[in-house]
Length: 480
Image 1 (spheres, rainbow, N blue to C red):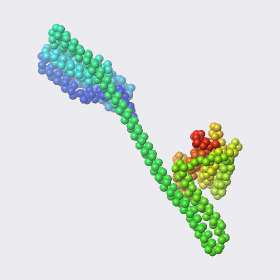
Image 2 (image 1 turned 135 degrees about the vertical axis):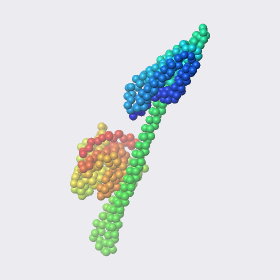
Image 3 (image 1 turned 180 degrees about the vertical axis):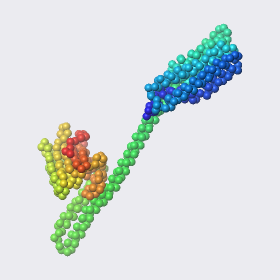
Image 4 (image 1 turned 30 degrees about the horizontal axis):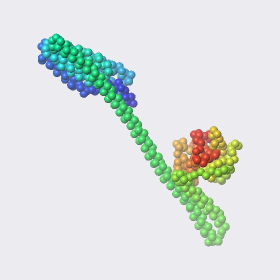
């Protein structure tokens, strides 16, 4: 992350660009030109002027090599580089280049006073130095004003020495104009370099955004695959459970029907009525299982509608609790009903769907509670008392925290081994949650393993025909 931040820093990218261009792409050309100019002076200029050229070349190469290693060590190890040091490194780089230009340019300045063809060589190699300045001195817009004076002065003096009188001064003025043009060209090079660096930074930012999108999309796809796999496993478990659940009442119907047939054939009808009652109960149970599957299918097809009527919510709650008392009693579980005194008698909503939901929630609580209590609380809720809340609290086995977000998914059962030992398809909570939303409310749950669960169903007290219900609060008080 630190390395990426440095790559987005303008000073850092400028230093990298300068290093790669000055000491990478053009290093051999520059060093070769210096060597050629020194050799040319030694061959063609009388005297010991070549000694000055060799001294400048040796000192320049030594300084250049030392500084290149120092700069490379800084910018090639971004994990050890403090971004606050970049301005200082940049200034030191500019100063080093100024020193190198002064060292390499001093022989050209001296050749202005050498015998011919010294001034001519000084003028030629000085013009080559101007080209180097135009293309490589791009660290800062003001850098050229520090590196140009020595070369420009050498050019002017060498040009003046090439002719006598006013012609010499004219040549000197033309040499000065070369320096002025160099300033303009260097400014254009600096601008081009900055635009290139900004383009690189923009490309890096776009690449980073693209990488983030790819990573995010990959995560979404992985999550979608996990959800699809979980849904497939849940449906497989549901089919296995349904086959078991359907087989149980069908077996009872067939078995008791055969017993009734034997009684009829033998003429002993003493136990026929009891057997027929068992057949009826098994058939009702079978019908209930099939109805649950049909209900969830209609909901997924958006075919369920709310048919509101006026009814007494307290009476519906009492009837639902009375219906599961035998199931709870078989498990030594006590049932309690608490109704808020301020609860209005008449409610305008779908009575049948409310009864179905309450039966689902209470039956679910009874199945998983042994030697405990089930309490149904009816109360008004909401800032304007626009909802009726039904709290179904039990002291049963509870639901694991990791299963809470999934208990309203169709076909999901939090504990397959346990739910296989009791009746149920795993559709009750999913149906109740969808019906609660259809009635302008929602179904929420809180639970702790080994302590119990509280499911709070909320419905609109006055259902609005166009379905524009008030927003259900995200959190509701519970009794657990």
